[in-house]
Length: 348
Image (cartoon, rainbow, N blue to C red):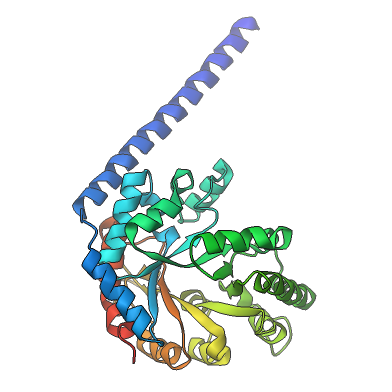
């Protein structure tokens, strides 16, 4: 019996050692890949370019800020130097700002890291880095910070103070996990809580925006979706919107109509495109679409851009999680930058 237990224990130890070796090997391989990507985009900070962007922003009251969502570069932030170089590459590509996530600028638990990784949104090791210093050295601005409703309800002042530390007046709520968007009562309660959170932040000089996915398209009455209720039951004095057109397109919504319904309450826009990035042959019955670079998919971004500009959108933020050119988020955002510059630079 003792020999059998010893044998089982030996097998367990060997399995654990094998898992550790595999994880370590993957981490080493991933770090080498990231280092090679960063080196391939090596650039220096360009003070003249920074001044041009600043001048445009100051002289044009209708200037639309272009930005990148931090989740897009999570894998690039394995150390300080690589993170800084990545931010400089974003700046060089023509973007002015970055949108930060509170769970990526503070240390996160292993559970959060695993959840985001399996969801295709790896947050990397950015939580260990000095983000105020990184932002200052890169020359980028912070357009907004993503947080969560619970954190705002627990301590609105702390959330507001962090936003101010990064020079932004905007906090965005996203990811209402374990929340029933098919229940009218629950959605009405959510709208009430959003109003309260928005009021608390407004007293600290910070505004609140709500970011959608596609779960808000659940019908809660015969005529209205959860998103309809959130729009109608929130007070524009305390709650406005960061609209994600990719998720609403994915959910089958009439996206132009939704953008028109939001009107001037759509302060920020998460932009993405949808298409098939796999090589052929393409055969019936199902061709899966994924995120792709702006202008290379089949979303009618020209129509959506025109609506956003007409309704006074303040910022347009690029966000993709995967399917990048050569598995390189920097190459991907560089390609998308061409569309961003064409549509949103020097808006008169």
